Length: 348
Figure 1 (cartoon, rainbow, N blue to C red):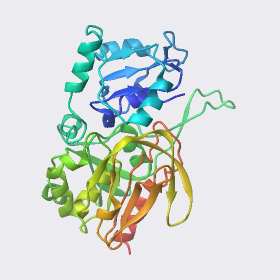
Figure 2 (figure 1 turned 30 degrees about the horizontal axis):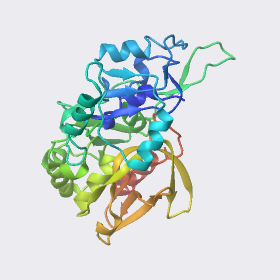
Figure 3 (figure 1 turned 90 degrees about the vertical axis):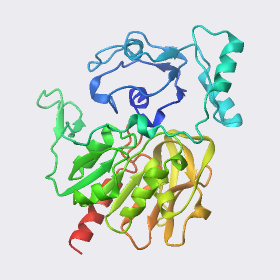
C-alpha cells in the first residue's frame, strides 16, 4: 500500500522491471525526503492503476511526472496479481515494456536481453567518490497535537564509533539508521581495497545491499576476505552473500526471489519469528559454508539462509533489510547489535 517511491529508488532493483501488486499506485505522490538514492534504478514500472492526482501534504510532484523526468517507462492497466501468480509458478523472467515494438518484436527483445545471473550491476550504482554521511538522520515523528507542531523528531545520539560502509547499492535509510545507532559513517566505493579500509582505522565495516549476481563480484570477495578477523563486520542483503563468498561459500539463483515487506524469518538461536523487508534474487548455499560459520536465520517460506555469524570472528550478516524502507521494523535491532559488537571489541 505504501513504499513505491522507496522501491523505485532502491539501487538493488538496478536492471529490473518492477511490478506492484497493490491495485492503485501513486496516491501520495513523490517527495524528496522518501528517496532511497539520488535517482530511480528500475528499468520500467508496471502497475494496475495510476493515481494521477496525489493527496499528501509532503508531495512535490505526481508519480508519472517523476518517472518522466527520469526517462523511466511506466505502464498501467495490467492485472499485476495475475502477473505475480505467473511469475511465482514460472519464475522471474526477462521482459520488455515498449511503446513502439509489436508483440513479436517485444518478445524477441526480451529474449535477447541478458540474464541476471552473472551480471555485475554494483559498479553502476556504487558511489564514484568516498564521502561522509552528513544528511538529516533524525527519526520522523507524528504531529504533536498538544503543541500544534507540524512535525517533531527524535534527537540523534552522540557518535560512539566510526565505521566504513561499502556502497554496493546503499540505501539512504541504512545510513540514517546507522547514524541513529551512534555511528559516524564514511561511505566508500565498491572497489575500495582492504588496505585502504584498514588505513582509515575504522571501528568496524558495513557491507551494504546491492543489485546483481553476488558470484560475479570476485574482485570484492577477495578484498572482504582480507578484512575477516581484523575488524567487526556487519552485512545485509548483498553484503550477506558477499560474506558467504569471502568465507569460501557459494550462492545460487532463486526461482523468483524474495520481494516485499512480509517475508517471515526465524532466528534459530531464539526461535523468534520476524516479518521482514526483502529484495534479492540469490541465496547462500548453506552446504557450502565452512563449519566455523553458523547459519542463524532461515526463511520460513522456503528454508533458505537469511542470516549468518562466524563462530570466532566478530562478523555477522542478514539477508534482509533491517532498516525497513519500506517495510516492518521487526529487525531494526541489528544496528544496535553491531554497535554492541564493536564496543565489546574496544572494551572487552
